[in-house]
Length: 371
Ligand SMILES: Nc1ncnc2c1ncn2[C@@H]1O[C@H](COP(=O)(O)OP(=O)(O)OP(=O)(O)O)[C@@H](O)[C@H]1O
Ligand SMILES: [Mg+2]
Image (cartoon, rainbow, N blue to C red; front, side):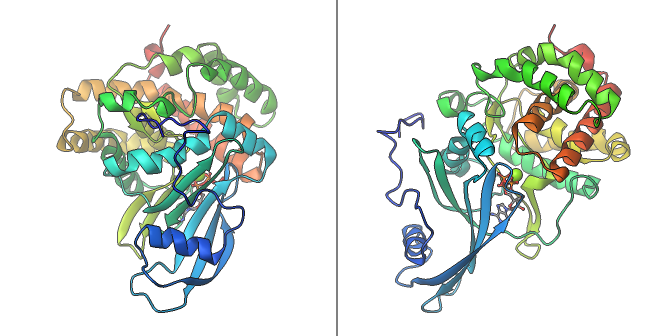
């Protein structure tokens, strides 16, 4: 790997364990030994079951059985690999989503305070796009449904974690040197130009199913979508990019971990407020957002300041919150036409977009769009 974390197929110094074709107990033994989780013990057998919806990647939970009893050794692991769906896989590869997540765990994660699963192995095979992550299993005690289950209390926990993600590398020059992190939602300056086309495609595809106000606003915003993505004033930091309950594990490890955040495929460099506006706008129902958003954003701002961020005053913070209400449109409408189409996916996209349109109107955000 290069000093900036970029890698070419030749020079990419993956850990020797690489990306296996098949998950064998002996391979998992090596991973856990390399991470010093076990010493002489062996994984004797393992069974994998699919979790998640497999829209962008495949996640499996592997139950582990060891030849000897090892106190504290994990009884299960989560393995994340490339999607078996050809469309999802080629899109993910084109946008470098797999690479982002692997490099996130290897290079960025150790410098952040946000709670994420421990990562025992992260590798990518550049030519084929196959990758693997071996992660701590953090099963949530309660599944929080994005459409109905996300409350103001959940939002408060989410924003605490957002501050723990954003504060440590706020305005960091080092982040700017990581070529693989450039751009938002996996979009670099080169491929951001496709946003207007994808948004127009969204309007066509969902003409009969999306609420009229969503279609109208997408149509209006589409021509300026690339400018919106490219002209985002600094300070920047590491942003999650898809910060919503599907990627959050609440009350993990029997409640010991209030919230852990997964799915770092869209990690990017840009304003932290993108994550805040996105989660409040798309995951809270409209009335709950209206009732709690000022307090929630204030709590986030206080956590940022407590985390060492300087020179970002409340007025700027609130203005950014309003402005980045637009992020949901320029992220979700294009994503809806790129990933494998499912019934739940459609419901999620359309509900989230409808909520975001209400947020944009409530906040009079249109006046903050770049002209
Ligand atoms: N370390 C983990 N511990 C427990 N559950 C996890 C872990 N990582 C992922 N999951 C579960 O798997 C789901 C999918 O994971 P993730 O969001 O990383 O993948 P994805 O690329 O979005 O795939 P999908 O298309 O299946 O949502 C998560 O929503 C979560 O429920
Ligand atoms: Mg996900």
